[in-house]
Structure formats: structure tokens, C-alpha cells
Image (cartoon, rainbow, N blue to C red; front, side, top):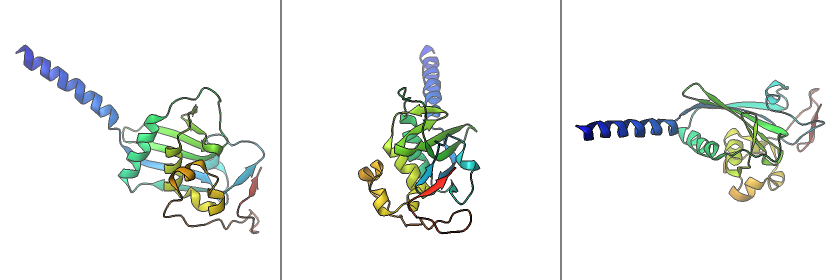
Length: 182
């Protein structure tokens, strides 16, 4: 009889541990600056969603659970970076989990990553996945993409298409590689 109780208790602990690792992503909301936007001061997490749609884009990725698994696997690998405290943010992500929690990820210039307000050690795979699945790379020329460290590792996505035609708030065409925001 003791063996039966022991087996039930062990089974219970194993099932509880397994459920922690099976957190499912319901959706990923991604907002980003389109192209190489020069700013006078760094953008912090939360700012991109408040700027004009001319300079930013918002996507919600809802269709592919495999993409969720890839991103979640990289999120679980993130570790705190105590060497600096902030990033000049270019992408904001809200990862909505099935347990109603969410994870806020901000990706900045030079692949700087913030997770729930804390600076993380660089993860080029996570940066590449978020940028690839959101269409972020489409707002850069192939020449500009050659400077991205993660592109050097993984290559230009097969679904890349150049969408860099931009206009300033007054409707005037702008250089595809540079725009200014105050």
C-alpha cells in the first residue's frame, strides 16, 4: 500500500513540474519602428505604441503555434545582464500567455533586449525570430540588412520584400534609409 501512495505522490510532482514548462502562447502583439529611424533621444519600452502610424507598425501574430514554440524556447533562455540598464528600443512585443500572464519584450538597436523592464543578455536567435515573423526586415534595404548581426548568422528571410517607401507626416517622400523623430 505504501508503494501505491509513493507512486501517486511522485506522479503528482512530475505532472506539476511538466505543466510549468507547457505554458502556451495565445498571441504575440508586435509594434516596431519602420526602417532606420534616427531619434534625438533613446526610446524606452512603451513609447513605440504611442507614436504616429507613419513611423510605426503593429502586427498581431496569431496563426502558427510553431512560431510560438520557437519564440518561447528563446524567452526561456534569457538571462539578466547587469552591465547596463536600458536600450534604445525599436521593437515592442507583448507575449500573451494562456494563463493570462504576459511577457513584455523590447528589442533595441544592436540587439539589446529588455524583458519585463530588465536588461537581458543578447540572444540573436530571439531577435531574429521576432524581426522575421513581424516583417521588420522588410523596412530595410538588403544592403542595410547586411549590418544586422543576426542576419549574418541566419541569412535574409525567404519571405523578405522591400517595403521602404516612406513619407514624412506632410506626405513628402523621404530617404528610405533615414527618417527623424523628435
